[in-house]
Length: 357
Image 1 (spheres, rainbow, N blue to C red):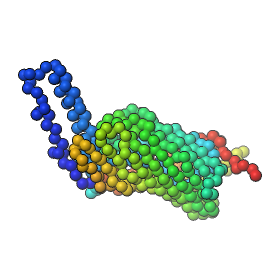
Image 2: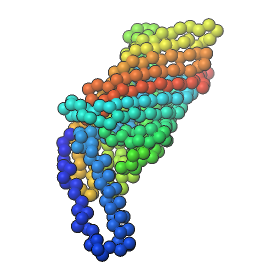
Image 3: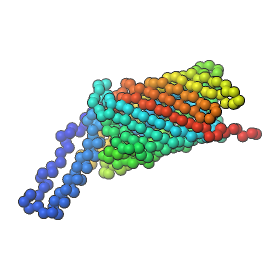
Image 4: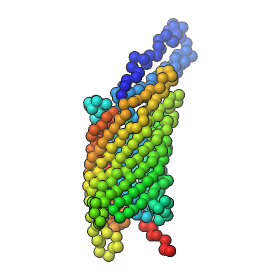
């Protein structure tokens, strides 16, 4: 990433504005203190905005990479399901645009979520209609690749998918969706206790799961998601916009169906390799009035790849599934490189039967 604004340009001539020490009174002291606080806050904001540029980092998008894996292009059966995900991301390595490692602070991010998913028998364009919502508590939300914020577990941004369509044919599934990320988590530019990213994101997704045999035991899947990000809120006079992001997630795996005595539902076990890749498609942009009218254009876009393992089991006696997924990152450019771990409990509250004609 180009270093457009060297540090030496950030010069604030405090000394010239101070009054003669011999003539200071209490009111003047308080005035000077207030001025210094304002100036220091501006310096902190500018530092947060520019530190990614100086160290060749980029601002993060809202999509949680690796949140889906095996059969990512498939829609679930008609049902009402709860989702309880637990997520951890750890990284202590930053990779610059040239592939060189840069010293970075240890990052440890946790997310605990509560969500609901509904898939109906209603057809739109021949596909089953579905929707989902996720509320989350997060700690240490990552805003920039080397500018993590530190906070205790707090309410984070909200995810709503009002539209999901799913189609199934003989040896393939297809899906399409639209989702919205709402900036409901705490965010203020320069704060170190943010629990959200302070921006809206409109995300469009499309994917497919291909089955290599008639029993649908072997499968390969990909889900493409494209997020269009708004400018961040609570940035005072500054303007910060994260570039649009393309994320591809999926997996290659095998599924086993085990009949269960006195239960019409089989036990379903899936295991295999999971992967993801993410690319910044448009530039991050920043505008800081304190530095003049120039727009900071961060042109060296980041990327990341992830590869790991996943296992999933559906237990018919409790009508619930448990999914475990671990992915290690590689091939990073202009961002941290670490590993992510997911575990999700999904109890099926009700299976929805088609209406009888």
